[in-house]
Length: 67
Image 1 (cartoon, rainbow, N blue to C red):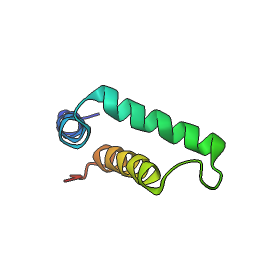
Image 2 (image 1 turned 90 degrees about the horizontal axis):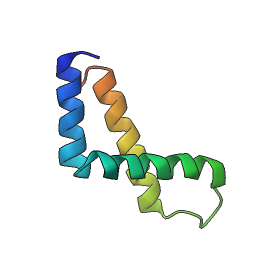
Image 3 (image 1 turned 30 degrees about the vertical axis):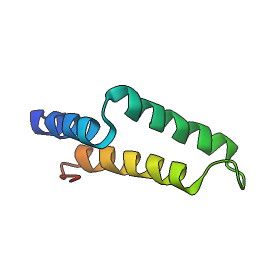
């Protein structure tokens, strides 16, 4: 990973999620969702949070700016 990508990832974590722990919690929830996706198991907002977190990390890894 290049230095710029690391800086973007740090920015994404701090500005988007407040801390690495909060981002980790959201991503962990995403893993749980993949195992237990059934109607009414997770709120639409929870699923959107996870999707946004994953999309942000993908953008950084591809060298794009997420914000």
